[in-house]
Length: 447
Image (cartoon, rainbow, N blue to C red; front, side, top):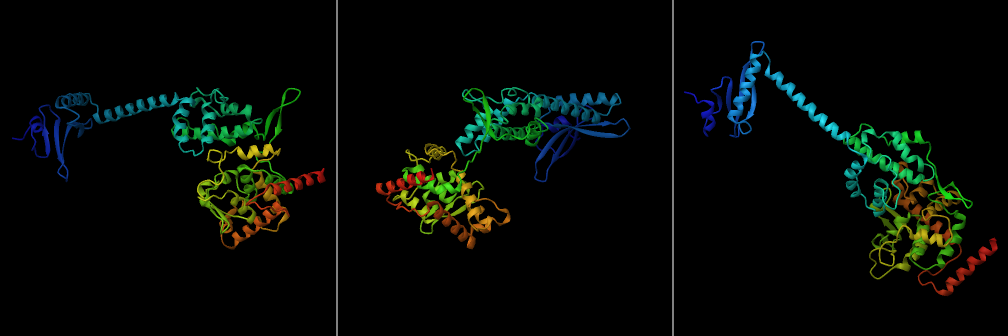
């Protein structure tokens, strides 16, 4: 006599097969895989409305005991007696459950505010930033603070689904023209933030699309608001990288040579190499080969994320020799604590010298000089600035073309220094005094 389901359930060595229960239509099904693993499932068999036969699994015995299986089988038998198909009922129940879950998820997403999104996304993004200054700017723009304006306060506690492109435009409008750089940076941050919101299905479209905002707000201004002497304010044009005309660079360089200090030397090297301020401030001795007169900047320090070899003119090498130490390790230009010069060190020096230009602007001075006063190809000058020049950029970093860049930078150094020369390895007080007299004489002659 074949075992019944209840007895088979208790047996450890039961043969794979189907075992009927005392309740009509309910079976214990025992299976065995090729690997010898056995499974036990409850199954119910029933007559379909069209006169056929069908079966449905109720689940494994580990999730459904025999009493629960009998209760479910009895319920299914009741549906069959009513002329209903249990399979259809199960599918409809699954759809209802799915709809409930979707509704609950939608309600949860719909309630997420901008402030909650920032708290969810910002910490992870901050970990990807390398600059403490950038971290501080992201926090300031998105979180606000006691000492900074909270630009997002009108929409901070608004549900994401209710934030429109017009809301973003209203946030940026007060600073769109008179604080254009802040508006640009805040707009970029919001675009990234809302891109994350789209990816998470909080919203379907990005309300901080820069092209749409430009249509709504017009072309962003390039000025800043300044106070007028008689009261009131007005917008004046601003150049983020104000440059010195190349014709005045030689006199400025001579005056710069008079000054002692790390910032002065760093600015001289910046002028001679036409590199960016950050690249000069972070220069390390292991990047320099004075014998070959080259400075190799690693890709991680470059804006274009490609390593760049800078030919060093004799004048640039002399500036470096002033700071050469026995160890030749670490940073070339350091502050009083031995760390890297701050991004304001060169700016402060230029202000002390009463120059309304930026350190970065000397790159423009060099580029204008190269275009106006030399016959070098445009690509050579652009490569000297580490700019991408179509598909030929790489060619101007090596081989004979590199020697063209060296020739260009040597000519620039001769132009900057003019006929004036100084022994930079050991500048004496007398030499500096002579320089001062030359500069003062030139100023008097030009007045």
